[in-house]
Image (spheres, rainbow, N blue to C red):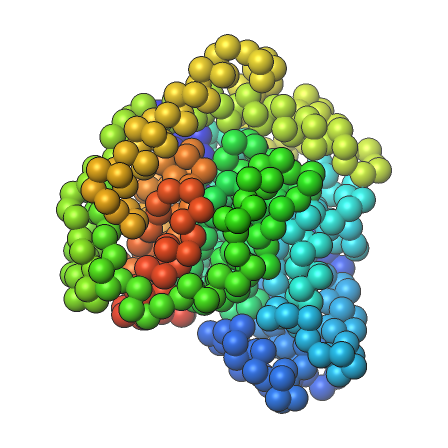
Length: 537
């Protein structure tokens, strides 16, 4: 079973009055009369931090600049529709952080830095957390997600929530990525008739379009790296257990994780250090002691490719000629930077992973989502998967205008996590992806990392037929729970394509070093131009 059979990626804009009505619960933010002229195009965290340290910028002026840009490009103009809700408290938070900086200095590297987060991450404030579903719009969570608490403690400004593929793209086998009942369609800023991929569609588009400094996405299989590739940005899916999942609407605890999305490897590394940390409420994070780092930027090295042994996974290629051509150029560039390229290093058992993975996700989705919904805050929202299915049936015109809930129905029929079928599928998926997969290849060839194209170029958004996914490399590291970084590799007809680096558990320092060196050597990222269609020919 291929990834496209159950886990899609992407978006487009719903410009109808009904779609705009769904935004009614996104409260407006009123800016002061004197709006800033701050140029935030391609601005890095270091740039913003330096401006605040010198007194040239304030957190308020930065937040105002990003909100102004969102107002100009998100619902107007190209209308990429990446932001589902702006935090009505953003300016007040920025003012408080400016006062704190004057009185006591900065809390850390993210003090006053605006961050957008995916709308499946709990915030106990005036915003909603819905996974894009209207079913959850009336029941705000009672507590911040653990990673949101860490962002607030670090001084980051939670600027708002981003749209996503509803339920993180685990509702239908014929979904169109980037669409949610609450948020409508998200468009790719490189060509607005193209899909942004998903499920972290809005986070990727917001970063690419310079609506924030950095964003947080989540991934079960491809939902960070695929939209990062499709929108020309850096995405990190970390080792399972590096970042807490407490307060994140789940799919499956054996694969779910949050991760950074940024325009540069340096900014992604800054955010990763803030997000990482052990959480007593998430047992998976207990094993990170001595393996996580509060300061990931220290591993960045322009010479990080020199002597690095990188294997080329040829059996994760050959689905798009132009992408393969970009990969050949990337391989040549890595060789020029001193990397030792081992080519090929095919990953075994690829065809043995998809079916057991999907079985595991169905079982865990039912179990994990029921637990999350049962513990959610006050309100009349659904308290179980059965309730969600019933809600969707009753509200099919709004929740199922383009595709159904086939995956929900499959998950509904699964038994408990003690079921031998589940345990067998989990064991098979882990063995094929870990011991007989990534671990075996790394050991056999003495590799620092495995490289492959992240995805094909973004496809045309098609609500009638759903996503058109040609291929990618996300599944093996996702099922293994191992880290995976994507970096811009180049463009096909002006559409972004990323290169992926992945390796064994807790190898983030090595992958960051390699990814940073590749980024600095190639400078492949190009900002979007918000064209209506790709420049073919």
